[in-house]
Amino acid sequence: MIKIQAFLGNNDVMDISEALKAYEIGGLTVNKVRGRGKRPPPEIHASKGSAIFQPQFSQKYVIELVIPESKEEQVINIIKEKGSVGKIFVSPVLRAIDIATGDEGESVI
Image: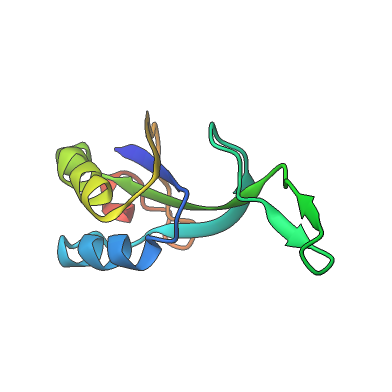
């Protein structure tokens, strides 16, 4: 099993979610976060346009999902095709446990 985290600079969440659903990927977690990347966030004009504010952080979206290794390349391709800006991180998952049933392994994802 692997965990994929996609940090998105734009809100491409629904497009990615629908494509993953079509590929029969069931569960995923989405968070709206604030962060800083290589590019600074857009300037904000305040006080009737006379003052310019450069925020330190901008809004970003994080999609997290745990999948079987056999689906890794297809899921990454879906995120790359449907997402416009961001980064994808892949890491191993050593163990998965369903709290309600006690089941373990790939069957819980």
